[in-house]
Length: 172
Image (cartoon, rainbow, N blue to C red):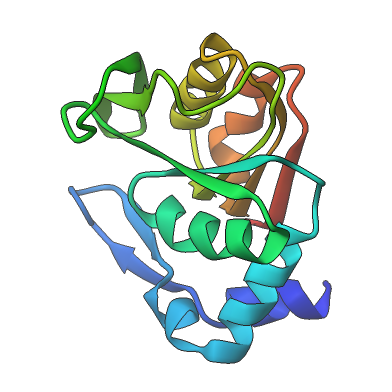
């Protein structure tokens, strides 16, 4: 196991039955509170690819993607839950391990052909990530890769992302 993986895993707290019974929530707030761990994660994400934009998926993806975009010299684009963006949007629906939802991105968030890295905290079933890939592509940009802090391998989310490079800083 790498030093970065150990640093991350030592700072993630398991919260059983959140947000509903039967779900084991991976709480990243202890990692975010540790400046050494947070800096190491942001540096790793920012250095993965040369991109024009970094997308952050609401809400915890924002926390990682915005500073990674700054560090990488790229723009930051939020992908938000339906109804939260003020201008004209594109939307995509998806299923997750405990429900379904719709995410949106501004229709004009990307220039044609821009290279985009999608960042989120956790890759679980892959539904949210797949919907984000669809939105970026529909907006005319190219998805270079998806990067997540943690992948929950037992949920097989990576299988829903055929043809997209996936970087997981830790896999559990």
